[in-house]
Length: 214
Ligand code: ZN
Image (cartoon, rainbow, N blue to C red):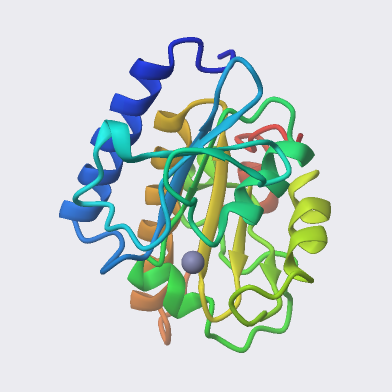
């Protein structure tokens, strides 16, 4: 899929997708943010302090690919994360970040291997997410997270921010939303299976389904 050519269509898509995520409890309060890349290279993002349940098509923000505010209300304070993903991934045309409960819970676990923090429990997870690195905790607004996110996003379209939540890029907003929902479901399964002997997909089975890295 190419960049979003029609800005009005993109605005409607962000509002509908955000409302769907919010009403199904995939993020709470004023957490979570969505963006798409427009054909002129600008990013269309959810504004700061907004609930994903009550966005309007005229109330979205535009920034450049460095997160600099162009017009509309001020963008989400996490706009720098979105911008880092778009710079790292030329084929990405949408980014979704949520504080979804089970993924946020996994982001608080002490794990031995931060390179991939969820097992490939199901084929859909292996297809839509693949590997999930955990980026170390950063306080809100810490600029050190931006270069780290950009570096990791060059080889991963999904990352988990420690003690925080997931960020997922896609070639379309539908694809990014599908992937982050799959991530949330697998995080839930992973927690349900704690203490049970589990058989995830084998490395070969997961590799046969893995999405492209770049
Ligand atoms: Zn966040």
